[in-house]
Length: 126
Image 1 (cartoon, helix red, strand yellow):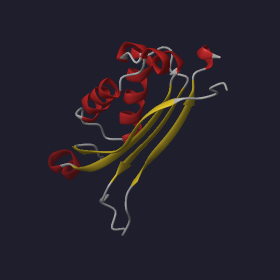
Image 2 (image 1 turned 90 degrees about the vertical axis):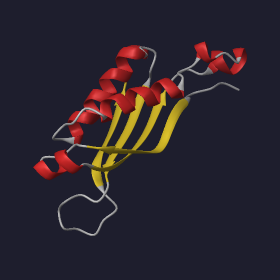
Image 3 (image 1 turned 180 degrees about the vertical axis):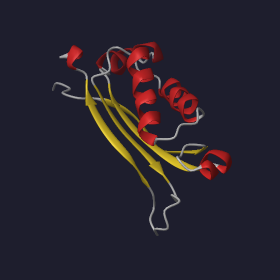
Image 4 (image 1 turned 135 degrees about the vertical axis):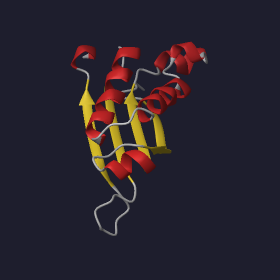
């Protein structure tokens, strides 16, 4: 058999952060959920059993945590920073699927959240 795609993922990672257009959001903050799936060639690590041969999910989490700690008006901006940092750290990344959800948004709606979903393909790895 041959691997066609492989991923490292972070699922439903919760953060309290200070992103939002409204002054109150930037003062009090709100809760966010991050779901991230990063395409990465895992064949070598599957054989070697060495963390240096993979995309370490703890390092991936550290990037997301650092970017979530920087206040922004728009979740789109936060998502862009996360994506840029991942691309810079791991040039072999083949794709990124990022979902960033603001829970309990201040818009008077009864909903689980609002946010952005972004899917990128790295043309340089083809």
